[in-house]
Amino acid sequence: MKLPRRNLLHLAAATAAIPALARIARAQAYPTRPITLIVPFAAGGPTDTYARLVARHMGNVLEQSIIIENVGGAGGTTGAIRAMRAKNDGYTILMGHVGTHAYSVALVPNLAYKPDLDFEPVGLVIETPSILVARRDFPAKDLKELISYVKANAAKLNLGHAGVGSISYTNGLWFSALLGVRPAFVPFTGTAPAATALLAGQIDFMSGSISDFGPHIQSGAIKAYATASAERSHVFPDIPTTREAGLPEFQTAPWWALFAPKGTPQPIVDKLSAALDESLDDETVRKRFAELGTDGLHREKRGQQALATLVKSEIARWTPIIKAANIKGE
Ligand code: MLT
Image (cartoon, rainbow, N blue to C red):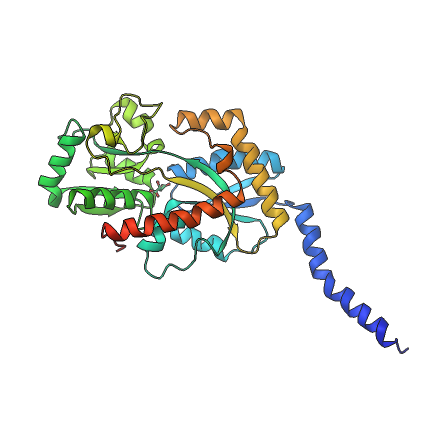
């Protein structure tokens, strides 16, 4: 049988539309199986803690489990690359942070991804103050003494961090640059193993998210010198800020956020974004964030567009700071 040319054209158009329709149907049904959330650092650190907290609640909202996969290494960029290259179907997402999505641009030579172009922003999760800490027997009682001691003894001191590009690395380099010294930098796959080394006295000092060290500060197992924030922490009101304690330039409020691979269908990104938003309003999530030393996220900072804007502005803000401080990746 010979079909008229017009019918053949209609048939061809309908056939071409099938993959697009299937994609829409899949996006509407999403999620039909567990989602993997890549955490680009070791278990037990802030990235892992925040990821597990929101993943549990987002999983309830989406009625699917969200499985955490810790892919540590290279200051978070190994996990970020894995997520960037994953299938963009919503079943692999990433917990990134200011390190993977802003510092790394200036710190990591030939970074394999463009943080602002190669991901779909899902939403900001949390911002936290950084804190400066040292082993319990570190011979300095306050920040001024710490500064003098580090200046005088830098060559024999070890500073812990979570890899080039991480928050703790950048904090450590910035702090050292402000003091004009260069202690030995000791890398770990996350700040949790770095904190364990600090507890054991294998490293001397470091700076990371306040939630890394809370119980150890409370028990006196490590010494805390200052929070690198404008205001004192509500969890540690006795710890001064860097402004109060004598190093006002050292101010940093790291953030964490969810990203999906570029090209993830918009309805899927919307579902993830809405589930994240609901999680951030959940009372148990808010309470836990508060216990960890962080405040909830204001509404205007939430959502995909706010995160897209933040990533661009943070790259623009940190690239010159890192270059001016002569902070380089190794
Ligand atoms: C960092 O320093 O970038 C993070 O604290 C790493 C981590 O979450 O372990």
